[in-house]
Structure formats: structure tokens, C-alpha cells
Length: 180
Image (cartoon, rainbow, N blue to C red):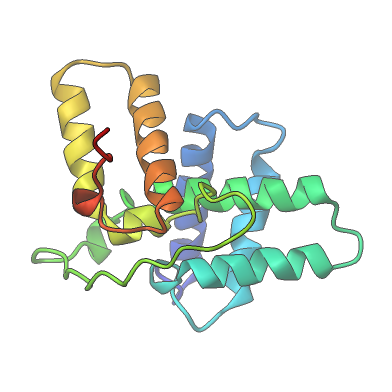
């Protein structure tokens, strides 16, 4: 995101708003989704959105839960806004002037950590895309080559995200079903 001028920021947030609208966010709720994403951007102002981790998102959501006047449904709405930001918007966002000249740099995969307690298949927004961008593209390509609907594509990707989150973001190729 170009933070050097207000025109660049405005274009970024308008593009995010359009993405949220494409993801079936009601038009009367769009301003709130944009506001949550902006609030998250301001939460760690010196760290670019693309460089933030799941821990940053969790810290932001925890901070929201502690604020007075913020209801639980608002925290869930903020989490949904960040899910759209990281799973749908940022992976495809590349304005012409910011487009990289060469292939994207691959980040090393981190070791999987399994959390105990709570819901194990809860997906941290954007974490799956950050770790397994090649898998996301492979699933999309396979589904699109079979001419499945967009809703089927999003449903399948959601299940892959949840399966991977359930296994502590372990590398999917290494996961196997136990033989009986």
C-alpha cells in the first residue's frame, strides 16, 4: 500500500471496499468493514499490512475485546473484515506502479504449532495464504479448470484452510489420513 500520499491510500481503501462488496458484505455495513481494516492498519502504523502475522491480528482482536463500548459482535465483524482483507483482497491487490518486476520472494515455512483448548480449526485471517500461497493457487486452478462455481471454490478453500488450521498449520503435503 502506498502510504506516501492520500490518493494512494484512498485508492487502496476503495479497492478494499469493492472487494468486501464482492464478498457479499451488505452495502450498509461496508463503511464499518473499511473502518475496521483501517483501524487495524493504524494499530501497528510502522509495519506494512502484508508483513503482519497472525499474532498481530490476534493482538488487535484482543485489544478490541478489552476496549469499553466494543461489543462481541463488533469484534466478530472486525475479524470478518480482516479475513476479507487477508484472504481475498491483499493476495490479488497489486496496483500497476507497485507491481513487482520479478517473481515474488518465497518466505520460509514456520514450524507448525498446535494450540490446545478452544476451537482447533479456527483460521487466523490471512495466515493460510501467507504460508501456502502456492497451494491456494493450485486449488483455484484445479477448481476453475473443472468449471466449478465461484461459491464452490470459496467453500473448498475454506475447508482446506480449516483442515490446515486444525493441524496447527502443518505443511499440507505431509498430512495423511490414518489407515484403518
